[in-house]
Image 1 (cartoon, helix red, strand yellow):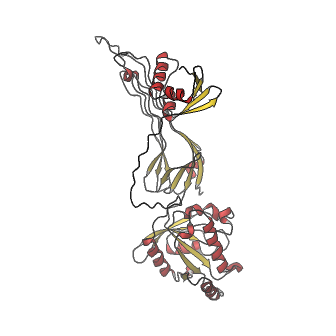
Image 2 (cartoon, helix red, strand yellow):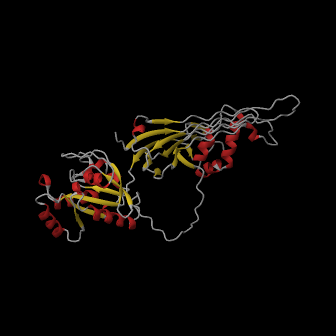
Image 3 (cartoon, rainbow, N blue to C red):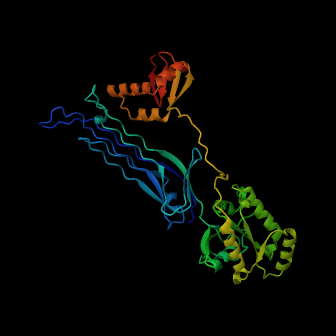
Length: 426
């Protein structure tokens, strides 16, 4: 079964907690703090496996969760790091954040890896907090929380050339005779229901990968037929081969077919019509083919067209040479739909982003948000007075108290951080 799009929830492991411990050994006076650090939580990592061609394995595994790191140990011993989870995916896999729509990873190279969800950092043990004033700290950090995301995983085939055209125009036959691919071929529409790839070898030694995609129909870019499900696989193709049934089988007009398919490509995003096309007039052995080809050339006098009979390999050498020539001069097309043209590098000063933001909720209520504050909050055990003091001291040090005062907070106001509330003291 060919699966090229799935939604997943990934949850990296939390970091282990730091330990509060003291060294107590015979003949070792004033041993001091010796609590070890927590281990790192496991990360979720995607890795390209060139032996895979579908996302079927992920279809039945909608939640991928890594283990947390181990807690710190005595004698300053580090807690064990959790193992990362390695997920094998096909070459050409893209991962997008479902909430933001941002691209998390684009895996196009063999054995390429990308961290999809980062494991949490382990908390520090109490020996890190020993100072001249407090040589026996009775607190340690909690481990950071691992990243949690909902992502969309899409497979976009890595092919240099994509075959486009209506159903039953001969795309599968073309792929089968120019490569060792074995697509299903039959005398009915939509025989091809999954993309097929084949390696094509040109007589002069050049080679490229060709993809046979399910036939498009009018309205495919709006979701009609089967072709719309696989238009995304054209996005990586640098050259499109437009196959036309010039014999007018099933009463179709080749000129109208050509117009309709190009309209669907135009309406699909990523400017598919800007990619070079090689137009093939297939089935030239049929009775009406010569007359239709004459009409086509009159309608599109500037289009280079190659008459072929793919089933008997007739006229294909010129097609393959033309495709190889175009590939030699055609660059990759950016998947964002916007070409980045940059002749030089301009460095601009960017002020450091604040560690937090203050939001006035009204009625004497305030909310503090920011990764640094939230990370600090998650590392504190509020049941211990010393840690609460350290939390308040750190907030003051990074400027939270001053920011609240400047924003108009008064004594007794409520300040929210995550789901907890504190009383503001000026």
